Image (tube, rainbow, N blue to C red; front, side, top):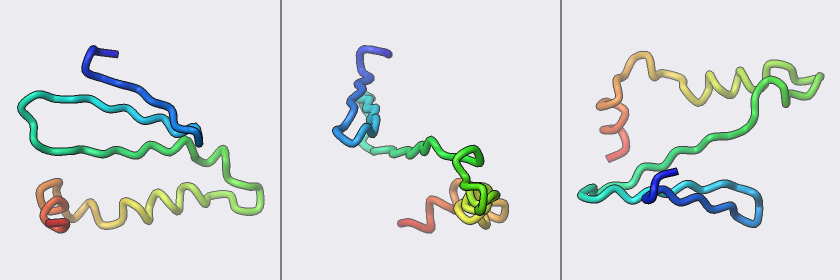
Length: 72
């Protein structure tokens, strides 16, 4: 890790990484979930893949700029 990157682990075991970038006046947040097909219960195989398609639905029709404009 660099000097500006800090790592904290919360009581609920969520890992938080924070970095100060001088001269930047914005915040970026990313969420990474340690879940996938290997966690699907046997009676719900494909659930993670279905959720992935639901989350990213429609992104093929919009570029990053169009998506960012949706949330202004």
